[in-house]
Length: 294
Image 1 (spheres, one colour):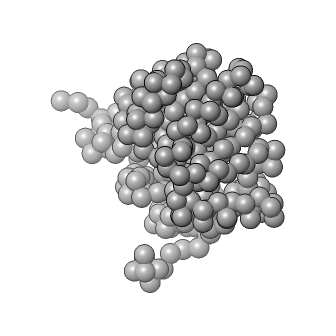
Image 2 (image 1 turned 30 degrees about the vertical axis):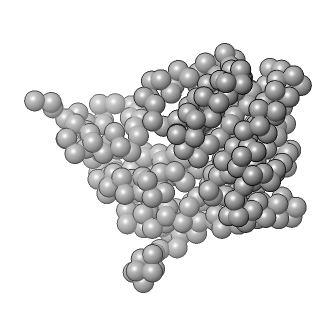
């Protein structure tokens, strides 16, 4: 019978929400002696996919609400929530495990801003025109910008695979990356891409967060992202500190709902303001009436 181990026997425990939840349910790990809890990529962890898991994990920890909670034998854990965007769900969950008034918010003045040095280009196309436009773009970039890489984003794994087969037919070398692949295979694909063993990566949003991409000079939104948060994270793959290229984002705009997002993006870029609707008022507790409305 497997025996549980305690976190104080480890210096650092790194886990995904799903794996940690399974370990907790099987009593393979306890979170009773944590000193720090770090939630990275907050916008993903607090979306509908992971929010319930994160809440369950946090409910098994003792999160500090004041400085005195961090002292003594019965000290509680200090919580850090980190992300490029902060959804409204953050406050709703954290309000259940700590005093929101005790949270210090440290943010960049340009949080939720588009990077001014990265060019944003939108192309209104019919769905049937997207493939030929992409093939032309990739061939042109290969000639004019040799050595820089291209990320091609699709909204789901099936489109990644379908598009990959078509690129094969056009003789365009590429790699594919999506969440339905085993974890070790995904890691190997991106590592090879980083090392320059390929200049085109067709992927889902699994590649839009937390991955170093200094080689990337072009991001193509083959499928326009469903939210402004997703758009911001995808654009963040180019123009990064240390990158030799300022970067360009080319987005194929096909549907009416795509146009609505584009208008918001263009307005924010023109006014040099933050993208709308993404600010989370993390200190505001959620009332029972608000929960009923949701």
